[in-house]
Picture 1 (spheres, rainbow, N blue to C red):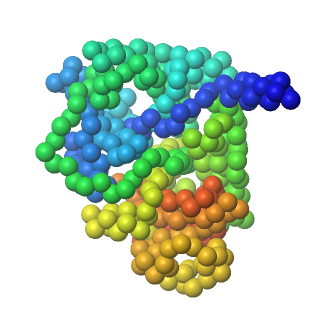
Picture 2: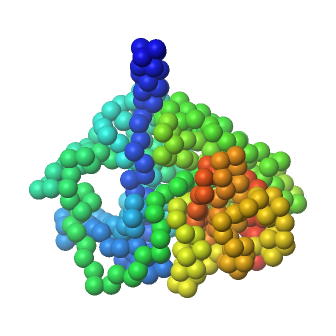
Length: 376
């Protein structure tokens, strides 16, 4: 019996050739990193962590690193034109460039993914300073988005070599944001399945949930989505593509304004969504409005919950359930002038799913915003 168990464990270890320890950081290419850092600190309660720029020997760009609990954002701006970062911002506006994944062995992660058909973005690179070393490697994924593999087990500094600790006298209170729950990518027509195959073949992910245009549709627009998860479930990447509808879907609008495929939204976990969203709204973050009629029947669908319904309704927080529990979620309006990247705040009370029961209400709210922009 023990031998059988050992064999099964060995097989499981062999299957997960890319063991991920979670999201290390999310890097945004932005037009003005200094101002963006101030915004995320003020509005979301991030804390100053590290800085890199001309003063630290980085001559062509600046990066501000901010953190809240296990959630780390890097905001990067080029100092001149005619380079990859400047071109990215010109084409896409402010957006996510790097979804960095924490690994035990960045060299092995690169070798495993490249051998399975991944396209190299960064060959294994060792960065060193007095605090130890960080090893980076990376591969391309949809659009101009990349995955960096980050090995930092032998590093004790603030972030990584090339950065210095950033201490600020301006430190707004945190808002209860904990870590990245999942990141959603929007891809072009008929591109969802090829990217699903990429995550399966190159990164060893599994397709754990699928939604088609019968699940995610309104009178006007539709999309299809598949949720990809790594072996231990620490990293989840839903992939969306447009589907035929009477009018332009929000995925099509994103693809038009982002000028290509990219990260649609970052979902961030909290342990108290009412407290978190109340604070974010006080600081000026705008969320999609949900009609009051949604709340008239929602408890018939999801059953008993621990929270009072009234504060959820006042804030516009959505509720859904699966076999393992329920979840609470809310979606911000786009954080940029282009109707592209937005954020989801999510609190899981046992549920492992992604709010299928809320799709219709969410899409109708998105379409109201699209209509105001003249893009429906």
